[in-house]
Image (cartoon, rainbow, N blue to C red; front, side):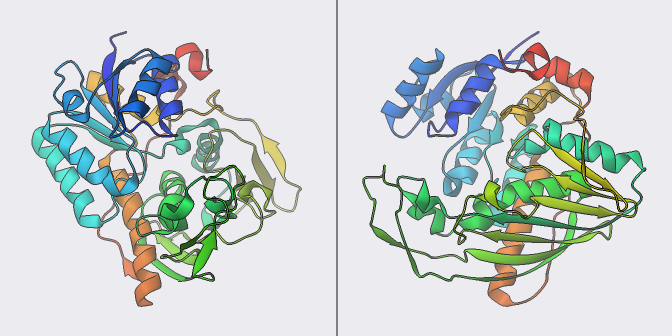
Length: 377
């Protein structure tokens, strides 16, 4: 199979799994180079994965590289993606696509004008867990979807991150940091959203770095964004649901007894697995029966970050559509930005954007995209 040469911009924590998967998991890509504003970070990743470290400018002007993976900080996503598109590169960006609607809309227009592809994380909805939920919903056996609930109750990043202050600044918070996983799942499972309403609060004006491994441990920092949010979403299909996000609980999110996401249908209820992972379990309750684990429909249960990137590269090579495209990313971002606006203004927000519900990921395409059928080497 022909391989697309890929360059990575941004060599922080998340870059490791992306570069590992590009190098080892996906069959249609070759990791060519990486760059970072901190040269030492790029050199470290280059040595780890056997690629070339260079400056951002050099990477953007390398004619052998066709696709850029943008793993910079969220506030820089739109600008770095814009520069890459202007340099004639296809772009796949870590979430969110943008932190303001206008810059995201401009990226879509620029990509269309230049005939380039624009894709975006998160892609956990392509993993075995959420694809199994999609299979159940599409089977027709459960009847119509009535409503859903989705929950992220998490003690904040101050408990594990060495420098967590940026998580509490504009462009982050639970809405834009964790919200993309939830908004993407809602779209992938239930379709695009029509309007959003939300209320939120900031219980603490300041928080303290709690990680004992951090050199900043014990230091206080300002909280600039709402950290506990309750929202209501109405999908274009008529399905309604709520999405609740918090960085203020005393436990880790997987220790909560509330479901990550629960979908109520006419004849059954589905407990959706962790929306930040690719695996199960998927639990199905038919009528008044107890919940039972439902078999997963694919082998993509490990950390497959970059799966949507591989799908985008496949689209470039074949001319077929891809799932996590720019319209999908813009709609994810607008859902979350609408939540922020609703909290600030106390009103429902009608969304301007929409997107198609991404097609399921079939076994034949998985075999094309992934080495060993998707399992890690």
